[in-house]
Image (cartoon, rainbow, N blue to C red; front, side):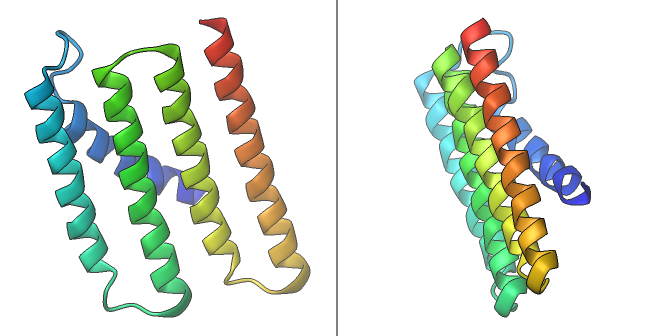
Length: 139
């Protein structure tokens, strides 16, 4: 899915910004707050880029920026307070974000093609949620 690759590239960039240096040592509260502010600033900058658009193009841009923000926040929380529950929340945020973006992409289609597109997006989200749940129970 071409959208997933674009989304993941955006998430990777935001997550790298949010969690740089968090792997070796525990993140301090000050680092956590600074990274929260960086995520908020990145979101505002990306959201401003959506301003000149309208219709489905605007909806798609907004869905992407909201998704990037929500995933970055969830992954930052998982890095700050590592736990299976926070890792699960991050996986859920990724799945829901990808679904919202795919659903907006489906809006450009009509009739049966749109229904199939939405159903495929929903199935992909359900698979991702099931995988996240399985990983959270396995450790």
